[in-house]
Every structure is written in C-alpha cells, then in structure tokens.
Image (tube, rainbow, N blue to C red; front, side, top):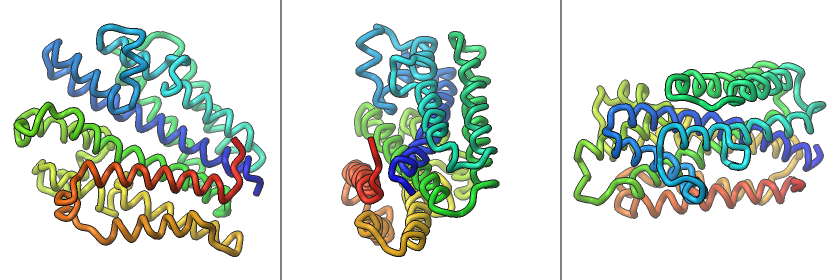
Length: 314
C-alpha cells in the first residue's frame, strides 16, 4: 500500500474521531455552563478552549468567553484549524484521496457527513440549537465508523483506519484528563470540593464515560477511581489502555500483512508494558500530570514512527 494512501486513511479517521471528541467536550461544557452564574459560565467556556488548546488563538480575536462566540469559533470557523468544520473538510479530502481503497459505503457515509454538517454549520449556532448540532456531529462520525466496521475488508486499509481512530482517542483522553484537573482546578485547596467533583463529572461526560463509571462504581465519584477508569480500565472504549490495546491489535495486523515488524512496534510494546506495569497508586505517587505528559509524548512519538515506517507523504 502506498504511504500516501496509508496516511490518507489514518488521518481521515483521526479527523473524524477528533471532531466527535470535540463535540462531546463542547456538550459537557454546555451542560456545566447551564448550572453556573454568568461569570462562572464564562470560566467554563474558557476551560473548554484551554482543553482544546485554542484559548490563545481565540483571545487574539475576542475579549469575552460567551457561549455563542466560543461554540461558533470551535464548530464552524474555517480560519480556525481546530474547528469541527475544518476537521470534517479534511476528513472528506482524505477520503476522496483514498476513495479507491475504501468501500462505497464508507465514502458515501463520509461524503454525507460532510454535506450534512456543512449545511448545519452554514449558519451561526445558537444556544437553543447547540444540542442538536452536537448530536449531529456525533451521529455523523459514528455512521462513518459503523460503515467502516460493517463493510471494510480486514486488511491493511482497515488496520490504518483503526490505528488512526485509537491514536486520536488515546491522545484525547490523556489531554482531557491532564488539562481538566491539573490546569483548571484553581488550587489544591479545592481538592474534594464541589468544584472538584464538578470538574471530574464534566471530564467523564466529555469522554462519554459517566454512565459506565457510575454503573461500575455504584454512582460514587472520586478522582482516583476516575483516573484509574480512564487510564487503565480496558473495558472502557475511550480509556488509554483500551486504545493502546486496539492499536497493538491493528499494528500486529500490519506486521502479518507485510511479513515483518517495524520500529513503531517496539515503541508500542514498550508503551503497553509501561501501562500494564503500573497501578493507579503508583501513578499518583509518580505524579498524575507527569505520567500523562509522558504518555502524550509517547503517543506522538508512536504516531511519528508509524508515519516514518510506512512512508507517509506530507
């Protein structure tokens, strides 16, 4: 398979996963803002921008952190390379580039997602329509993923698509977990407070994990349990351990396809050994922030190694 095609498939699914993750984070921020005073709501929208790494760019153009300004900047501003509309445009561009490598159903689902979201985001999003817009983004991304799961041959194309999905999922969960707690909580004095619990609840909502966590833990919220759930629980499909297990499965698929392992396989094996060799107590003793920073750097290193090993073309 040509490196250009492999890159196109992987990034197509990274962009789709990123768009869905962004929509989930916005929905969590919207829910939190609804329960806040106007000042606190502004802080909540600022926190969403910080989590997405877009606060600096937003602040160059706007002086206030209102729902309308933040959501339209994140959702539909094509001058913002982190906007959902920009991601969907790029997912479709990559899909079109690899159209002969994917099934008709995957192409049609991707093209339909682009058309639907282009129309939905053609007009400014209001508070009253935000929930419906975010639901559309999640639904369209899931339809593409469903088409891929249901129609694609389990070959190298499928493997690159899944690797792209789970690289993005692992990175997203780690960044949200790090930023939402270690950057946004005002000080250690707030640990255990109402604000502390609210931030952790929002974190779970932003990765679609609140119901699963409460089901496993009889409704109890605590930071150590939530961190363990998002980092180490291989039953939850957006946990870091689950994402890496799926990357490993599809990297093994590539090794079988090509008859050999590449350098990225060694990096991945080391990363998985690191995850399996710790428990949540060890992670907190080491420092949750420090552990997550290492994980994010290792995920980026793995992504670069895959691009190099399989000759991706920029």
